[in-house]
Image (cartoon, rainbow, N blue to C red; front, side):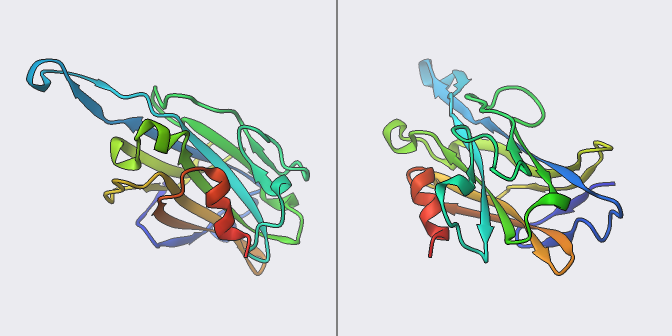
Length: 198
């Protein structure tokens, strides 16, 4: 049974799941209803393009663009972190975007994989995470498809244009997951990445 995490909580992935080798990081969200028509009687979801990315860090730092896995670079050079494509709307049930991680073969020099989501052209489109509902991140055993843990974002993220959803990190010989849920006002992925350069 999957563990439901709250903001700031951590869980060991490999200790509690012997033999775990590969995981799927699934992310999902829905656009909130947008009022329209007479007196707001008619409403429809506003199209919001969220982009998930994985920042593969050495010593807690992002060392170059090659370590950013996103819709423009779907596969890390090591082959151990792979993005499965961009969802432009967030429509439909289940995961909107998925990132596959081969925990066993991630090169030893990498110690953290930070999973972030930003709203594409958020400033130009006057969009923010307060316009999104049902956002979550979950970790799934790639082999068995069993959900290991899930973190549903419940805070008010109005005016936030990017989000650090969570991170997978090494702790000795273990891989752990932390539910972060930190919103930022970074206008795009490039600005968000700068937080991990120094």
